[in-house]
Length: 306
View 1 (cartoon, helix red, strand yellow):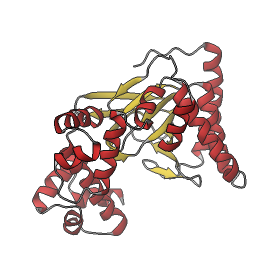
View 2 (cartoon, helix red, strand yellow):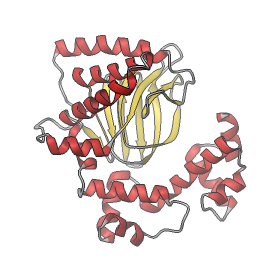
View 3 (cartoon, one colour):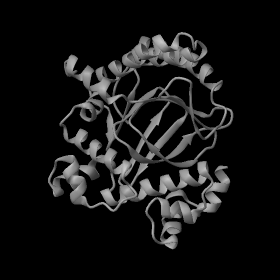
View 4 (tube, rainbow, N blue to C red):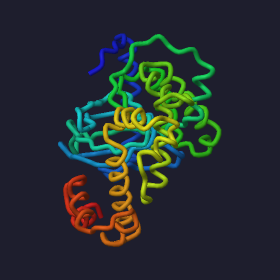
């Protein structure tokens, strides 16, 4: 847990905004357990009604806020918890295995997620002095901290635009910029700045991850990835694992499995065709690794999700 202290008056204001935000979100979360895209590009709503539900997804760079409930991000070397009134940043494309700690049908886990615009982040970084603020609780490419009232107000205004579609084209970009600004200004700013600043090691790793995500079905070596990151092989491997918590080849494997799952769910492909499409040569190996990641064999997992 982080030790960022929020004044009592500000916390009261945050609770008032959060109550309004929760009321609005409940009207848009029609499919519990899924990430529901909204009419505003890049803005998603997440909802889960199951206690101890373990989910596996693939996160893109994101600025998020937890409205209700509690979750933990699970990694090979520890966990990171995030709960109501927390903001969080995911700085790099990465596999995410998480578990809901506090959630029910009466009080579901609720969160808002906004795609991080790294170009906007880089522009703001150039215009802003580096804040001298207490850092958030960080875990590889993700960080968590209590949200400020200013950040939450900007999030709430953006969500309010879902009821005002005629205003969204003009106002949404302004609120999105404000959300990025307040995130950089607060304790999450250090993590966000690291991934938005061109030439930083975190940014170089993020570039390599993007390349790998676009080419995951092709044979790839560590040397190839290190060249894309403009790093030596040993330096690249060390920093890649520090950011993603897995080795580059393990990361590629998870990319393939997530894509195979998507092909089966959205395009109706069977496990054999999906596994071949993402680069597997052995059906047995695919089934074994799929079950290890998602908890069930491909056919059973896809049938359940449908």
